[in-house]
Amino acid sequence: MATAGKVEQAKVNRWRWIPHQVRDAFKYRDLLRNLVVRDLKVRYRGSVLGFIWSLLNPLLLMLIFWFVFSKLLKNPTPHFPLFLLTALLAWTWCATTVSGCVGSIVGNGNLINKVYFPRELLPFSTVISNGINFLLSLPTAFALIIYYLVRYPEHYGPRYFPDNLVILNPFNWNLLWIPVLILTQAIFLAGLGLFLAALNVYFRDTSMIVEVGLQAWFFLTPILYDLSAVAQEATQYVYWLNPMASIISSWRIILYNGGNIDPFFILRTILTSLIVFVAGYLFFSRLSRSFGEEL
Image (cartoon, rainbow, N blue to C red; front, side):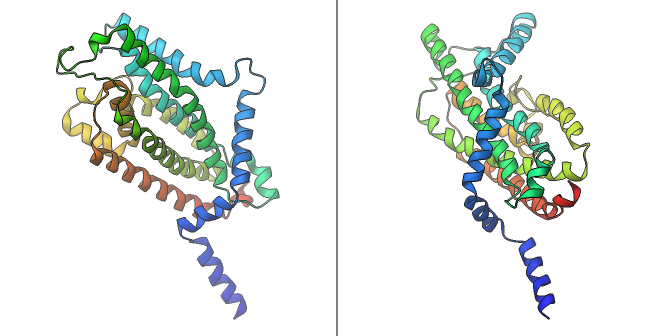
C-alpha cells in the first residue's frame, strides 16, 4: 500500500501545475543568475570587442539590407534603416535564443547528471542572456530616431509622405508599452525554447531543422517588408500563427511610426505567447524526467 501511495504521489508530482513549477524555479534564482552570467562570459570570451558585438550584429545586417533594398532595388520606404533596425533588433533576440535553447539541455548533460536543479533554468538562462544583449542594443534604435528627428524634422508630420503613411515623433506615451513587449517576447521565446530543448534530447536532428527553419521564419516575418503590403486576410493568419509578426509590428509602431498601439492587438499577442509558453512548459515537463537516461 505504501508503495502504491508513492507511485500515486510520483504521478501527481509529474503533473504539477505550472505556477508551482515556476515557484520551484524561483527558489533557484541564484543558480539562474549564475547561468546567465556564464552564458554571457562564454559568448564574449576571447573577443576583442566583447558585448559591442550585440550592437554590431543588427547594425551590420541593417546596412546590408539597406544597401540591397534601398540603393539597388530602390525601396521607397522612408527612413528605411530605422524601419529595418526596429525589426532586426527583436529578430536577433529571437533567432539567437532559439538557436541557443535547442542545445541548452544536450550541451549541459554532465551538469544535469551530477546535481538536481529545475532543468528549465537552462533554456530560461538562454532567453535572459540574449534578452540582456537585446536591451544593450536597443539604444542604437533610439540613437537613429534622434538622428532622423534632428536631420529631417519636417518628415515627422501627418501629411509628409504619400500613401497615407504617417510618421510621428516616437518619443511619446507609447514608449510605456516597451516593458510589456519585452515581457511578451520573453514569454513566447521561453515557451518555444522549452519545447525545442526537450525535443532535441530525443531527436538530435532538431538543431539542423531549426537552422533551416529560422531562415524560412525570417522571410515569413515582416522584417524586410510591412504587413500592410500583404492581403488583409493573409495578414490576420500571419498575426495569429506567427507571434513574432505581431511582436515586430508592435516594435515598429512604437519606434518607427510613433503611432498608437491597439490594446486588443497587444492582448491578442500576449494570449498567443502565453499559449506557446504553457504548451512548451507542459511538453518540457513531460519529457524532462527521462533526460538523465538519454544524456
